[in-house]
Amino acid sequence: MSAATERHMSVSNQQLTLEDISKYVRAHIGEWLSEQSLAKPPAVYELELRERMIRVEEELKNQRELMERGFDLMDKRFEVTDKRFEAMSAENNRRFEAMSAENNRYFEAMSAENNRYFDAIDKRFEAMSAENNRYFDAMDKRFETISVENNRRFETMSIENNKRFDAIDKRFEAMSAENNRRFDAIDERFETMSVENNRRFETISIESNKRFEYLTKRVDRLMVWSLGVTMGTGSLVVATLKLLL
Image (cartoon, rainbow, N blue to C red; front, top):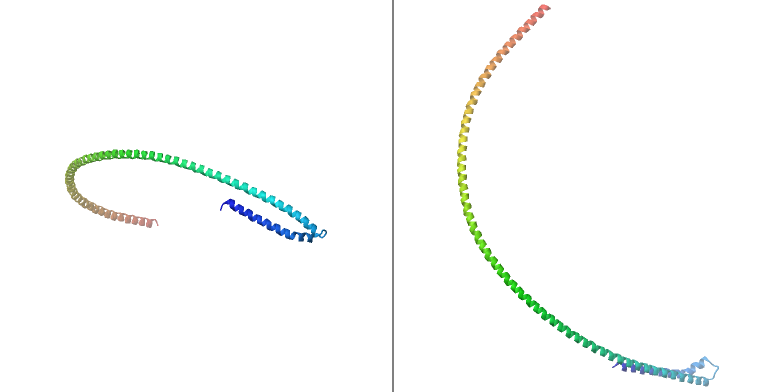
């Protein structure tokens, strides 16, 4: 169901509603007016009411005609708007399709360009990889050559060092034998000196004992002499004191 049909149905419902109101007013307006005013007879009120009702009906008719013209104008405006919207939609669809086609061409061109770029990168990477492989192979060969040369030099140095260490060992053994001989001579000399020193110490000890005994005898004689002198002096002093007293 279209919008215009719905609007016509709503207008028909509105017309029926106004007719019902008009019938109801015609049926009861005389009673309402007679109840409000008792100065005029009912016939006069009925005439006035009919005139008023005629004016109301004419006004309602004019209002209905205006509403119908307004709805017709609105329908025409809606139709124009629908046509304009359809034209705009068609224009937008055309523009969107043109933009979509342009974007597709642009993306296809970009995709082709990117594919060429990545193909060039792949080729360059393959060339670099091959160059690096050749470089690493050359380095491996050079390393192997250096390793062989270093092994040869190490073996030569090891043999030379072994000879030097053997000579050092022999020299150390000779020095050790010479030192042992010297230490043995020193030990023998020390033992001889020790025996000589012991003999001298014993001689000195005997001589010292003799001297000590001689000194002891002299001290004993000195003590006896000192005691005799002391006793003689004491006797002399005692005798002198006796004479004086």
